[in-house]
Structures are given as C-alpha cells and as structure tokens.
Amino acid sequence: MKTATHLLDEHFREYISLLARLQQFFLEGKEDSPEADALRDRMDRPWDALSPEQSEIVAGLCADLNGMIDGPSPGTNPSESELLQESLALREARDAGDMLAVLRHLRALTHYHSPAEVAALRAEAWDRIGETEMARLFSEYARKLDGREGRNGAPRVS
Image 1 (cartoon, rainbow, N blue to C red):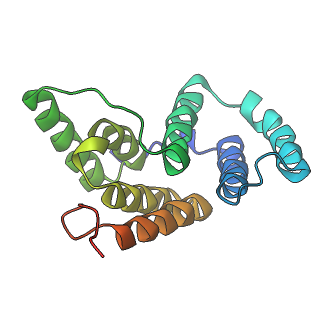
Image 2: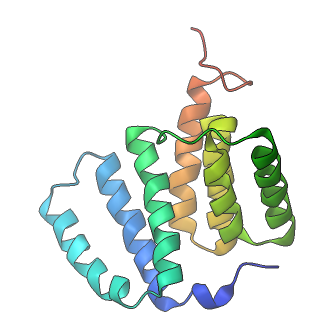
C-alpha cells in the first residue's frame, strides 16, 4: 500500500512546510524571534483544516523534530516479539512505499537503530512523500550525527 495520498492535501503540505521553517528557527536559536512568532500565527489556518489523522501524523513529526533539539525521548522496552513485529512492519511499509507508516513504525524502533540511521530513514521517507524541506532537515541532522558516530552507531573516539 502506497502512502495515503488523500492525507497529503494542500493544508497538510502547507503545515509541514511551515513547520520545517519553524524548526529551522529552533535550530538557529531564533525560536523566540518576531519572525518565528509570525510563522506560528500563519500555522493556525492550515492546522485548523487538518483531519484528526493528519493531526496525529503532525504530532509524531513534532516529536521527531523535538528529538533533534532535546535528543530522543525515552522509549518503552518492547518485548522481543513486539520488536520483531515492528521491524517487519517497517520493512513491509518501506517496500510498499507507505512512507507515513514507515515514519510511524520507525518511532517504535528509534532506540534500536543509531540516531544517524533513524534520521536518514526519516529524510528518505519525507523525500519520498515530496516534502523536500523536511527531508533536508533530517538529512542534515543525519550527516551531523554521522560525523559524531562510528559505523556501528557508537560515539566516535577522537
């Protein structure tokens, strides 16, 4: 099943675009600037037009973006069978081209992959959805993390 395109309407895309710009303000330490406040005001109209399912997708994305600033949120410790189930679901979603499902399953597996790998997979998913600014943010974050991690995801020793 490919990504549900009915969820990717103009309001959703506008909100995601504005959210990517707001995230850039956070990354630059300008989240309290007048420009960031004006951007937040512009986000109200598309937010109000989102469906509950779209709002849920945005909530997950916001958690992903917050992880860029605060580090990953503490996760639960799924059982081995739950971990296997999520891993299989992630692979199936990726193979089927359902990038929204990829993002959802990836959140359940965040603590079982290196942060750079998670960021790269998020970048790929947002790129395939067609949200290039969001993809760029995650791609840049992955490259930044990759510079701090060894190949196995462990911190690089200088």
